Image 1 (spheres, rainbow, N blue to C red):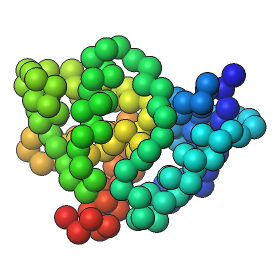
Image 2 (cartoon, one colour):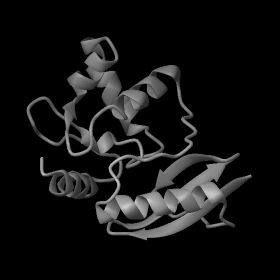
Image 3 (tube, rainbow, N blue to C red):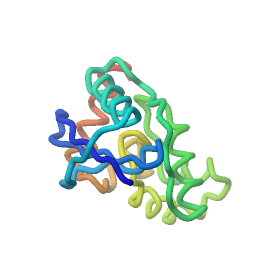
Length: 152
């Protein structure tokens, strides 16, 4: 059974889902909240700390449901330090093949756990922001928040 909560954030309402004790999605699209569970309470607390600037890493049990390439791309995202950015090429290099930069971009766009798995930290090689599945204004906000907190 899927449990879903809604939390208020500086970016608007965020919906977080969990099943079998694992966080399975984070979305800005409306979902019907259900009863909460311990892992959702923990996710809510950690997201609140992140937005307050007191948390730079998430420590949550995650369900990374996707192809093996997508999961590998999402694992690489988690290696990009808080307050820093990397290009799609950099991420592809982390995965061992610079030629996969476009595929990396596609995998990032399917990330079911934005913010927690920080796809907002990936930008184009020319320094432009590139896309963001949650909207470019949210990406700008997240990058500015992390830059301000980290001093980078």
